[in-house]
Every structure is written in C-alpha cells, then in structure tokens.
Image 1 (cartoon, rainbow over the protein chains, first blue to last red):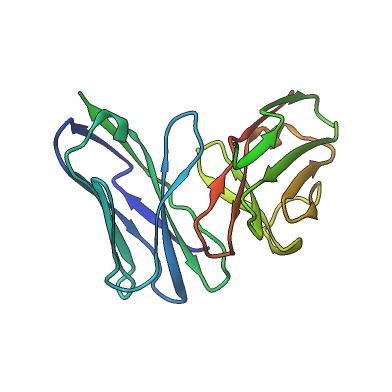
Image 2: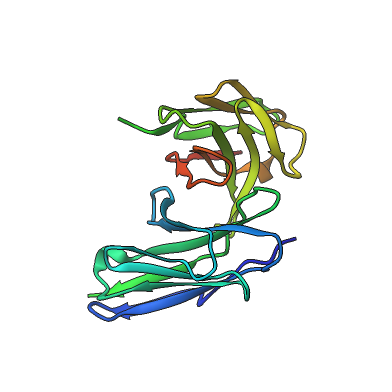
Length: 111
Length: 112
C-alpha cells in the first residue's frame, strides 16, 4: 500500500492571506505528481501535473513545487479568495501507472 | 459541451439488483477510469482502460465488471448490489495513463 499523506487535513485562512500545504509520498519508482482541486458538490479538476525534481508550476495565484528525491510537494495559494475554498488533492503516479490520491487538505477561506 | 458525462446522476435501488452506470467522454482520450468515493470521502481507483484494454484492475469484488465498447465509453455494471456498494462513483478520462484526468460529475448510488 502506497502511503500518500497530505497535511494539514483542514485549514482555515483569512481572505487575503497566503497559505501552503504539503503532500508527501514514497520517492521510489516515482513518475509524476498530480494536484487536483475539488469543490463541494463538484468533480475534481486538475491543477498541475509535475514530473521533474525541482519542477515549479504556476496558475494564477496558485503554484506548486516538487521534490522527488525526498518525496514531497508543496501547494501555495497567494492572497486567498473565497472561491479558493475547496479540497486540494495530490496524487502521485508510480511505475504501475496508477494514480494514488492523498486524503486531501480541506481549505476554507474566511471572508 | 460536457467533456465527461455519466448517467444516471442518482441511482437508488434495492439490495440484490443488477445496475449499470454509463460514462462517455468526447475529448478523444485513450484512457478511462472508474473511481469510488468511499465513506471517508477518499477517492479509490477501481478500473482503468487504455484503448479499450483493461490496464488497472484493483481489488474490487467480481460483482463489478467494466465494459468498454469503444474508446469513448466505459460502463460499469454491478451485479447483486449490496448495502456497502452505496457510494459516489466517478468516471474520468485522460490522454494517456499518466496525463491529467478529467472527471465526470459522479453518480450517487444508494442501495436500500
């Protein structure tokens, strides 16, 4: 069983503040890491796909970094807005080509 | 245009019945998936098809059988439904087994 951990499990952030959270995973046999954003009552939506150690990706106010050697990725949100409230899932892919979802970080932005 | 669609959106049925959930994607993707969102809200992969061939088959009861008539469709048939099958089932597709996935809206199955 592949252990994919996300921390914290939940987070409340004041509107306008910046925040970040972590995804950790086994570093062996790693191929790629996906980040998804999942709003309540909707479907997960892909944010980033990252493959190389040291990768940094950015989409608007959201960015992510990847460290494949130590097995972690950070997701950053700058200047949080209410529409950022969602569960953020990371999902590494290993040699078996199976996406393994983490437990998610539930982010709530307080207006 | 809906990229990944599932029908039905809600399915309420009795224990012991057989039911199917349909999934269609119009993205031209080669790979399709079925996920189950369990009681703790975790997403667990059940099956994956690439070019109509089964490539991932997780440890699910053999009452669950996926069928892919063509690359754009991956249906999930469930025999002899049990109470524990109640969950939200998501279909997804991607260009390849390692590419970003596009999810359908989910099918909420309730077994009474």
